Length: 293
Ligand SMILES: C[S@@+](CC[C@H](N)C(=O)[O-])C[C@H]1O[C@@H](n2cnc3c(N)ncnc32)[C@H](O)[C@@H]1O
Image (cartoon, rainbow, N blue to C red; front, side, top):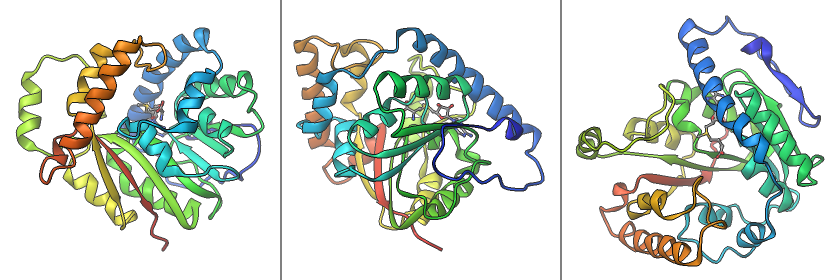
């Protein structure tokens, strides 16, 4: 896969690192991740449409901070002119939003079809100049030091568990001093919940190598982002998979469904703020400043 890294667009300098070559297990993981997300993105390519004005307005106005993504976009602050890296950008939905909010976005992903979808979405949203996408693995791709003001990752770190320390070490060099991190990941810190989860027959689509983050991974993240701030989501919000239109889409859901999603979000916001209850959340939003070596 290392040889397959290709650059689409121009802008930030991409630096290939000399290395001894990935292990067979690493190559297997890359292949299975790429194949899994290639399939999803090639299906989505057919239906790709510009971001609706309604959805864009929601992220400009940010009136529902109890909904995880609105909370995270609010944490990003004013993006105008910011150099943002979308690590594991997938089909680029977040990147496009950030480009429309004024950021200069670079996204990369190991799945070529996802990068293709992201590039297509940038074109149909009129932000091809503000958002460029690269295909490569987080382990191998590199950028010049201080290339970014903020690194964003949505649901990607839990796909990188064996190389989390390596990847976050690289990301901390790619951001400028004072550069920020914003990640959101599935998490399960309680061993009891993990045991229970094994007995609950809820089907989730997942790659063989992903799993919710545990305490050891949270420590690695804190090592690179010492002022890490956590906000927990998705205790009752797990029911949104039955409430919102599928694939999970707030804007395409009816008003009563949106009201229920907000009620669940607000209940979680209150419950998961109580001492000791936060860790019952199934998703953690993490923000802070990268430590510079
Ligand atoms: C759950 S998806 C999230 C995608 C995107 N961030 C989003 O929110 O739509 C996880 C992404 O991580 C990417 N990924 C997995 N392993 C990777 C690796 N080693 N290097 C780069 N991307 C990787 C997958 O291809 C996939 O697009």
